[in-house]
Image (cartoon, rainbow, N blue to C red):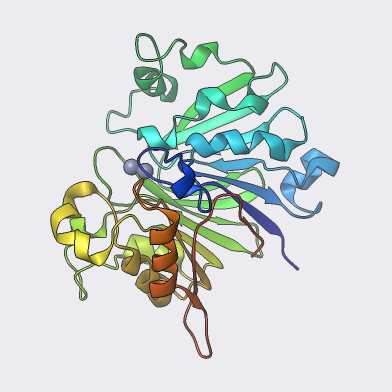
Length: 301
Ligand SMILES: [Zn+2]
Ligand SMILES: [Zn+2]
């Protein structure tokens, strides 16, 4: 019986991609919303009948707008967990309607920064304050708290969370492994494994951190920004080739690989081509099922 529900609220990377060429896969940037699917979880105990509403949000890109309709008009009561602070992962924060409510309770967690004395709120305020934006984090309505986290194990909203630092570019970045005790999601939207070397296939190292996060996961949501023919010219952009995500899933024994964080210039037709090239239903014998992330999809591993 499925227990975890994963809403793909934003699947695009770098910058939103509006327009008729992007309608089927969606143009909002990174955001996943997780809920417990039954009432016997830790979260269910606290939330009772509201247990199916999302309580844990991964990244706050433009897709965060899509979480409010999932809450049935109720204020958000839960945690937003950021992988890192790049624009495409935080730009939805001030536009989260269900948090813009005096009764909302939002715990915002982000990776501890290189200057560990910097508070989470002051780090966020560097990118969200005048003249860059009209308000600061402290002026958001609702009961917001801000904190940093270190790599390791945490308990968040009734989920077991493992945080590991993974290579990306320009700022400390975490990948997460999230389990409800029955289903496991691995989430690495921005990952540059070539930072550690080319690896056997030239797509980057299948390093211990990535293998630990993805090991035996029911769902691996992974960076698929680049196509192989782009790697030579764009290796220093901080991202993965889609083929790396599939091979990581294979090596780690993941059941489903979700190709994610699509480049903003990938039209629906181009992503259909990616699905034809790498998509798989898992087939006979072991190979992960491979799907191209589409906004609005709900996964129940
Ligand atoms: Zn990104
Ligand atoms: Zn990034």
